[in-house]
Image 1: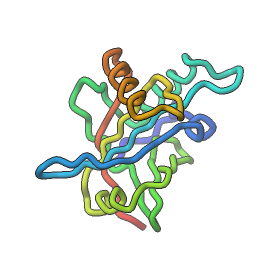
Image 2: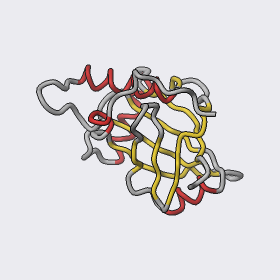
Image 3: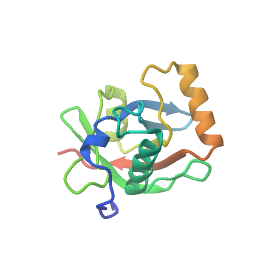
Length: 158
């Protein structure tokens, strides 16, 4: 069951500026779809690192994500897949977040009922970050308590 929506969820203007990436973590006996969400950087005179972090905290709260140094909570079925497209119900009353260009294996994994681990960093990460810079950013965010995560599942495709 998906938790009830909250009016404190960030609006579509903020969520539309986020960056997201999908991937698959494979272990010997299982696979977990992954969805990484971050904000690329403050833009415009009204957006600062503090306002970005506040928006990301609101997003994490509206999703029901927990601290990265604890077991990820199960946050209900938050992803809907239809016609090869995926959207994330982030708790806004009217809007959802489009998952950009998910690969077919990621979609197939979710359709088959596999879990999806949503990982969100509160601190911005430039869209131009390399893999090494992203790894360093994730480590730094983890060390400073700036990671939120949870486990979701796909709703039945429509």
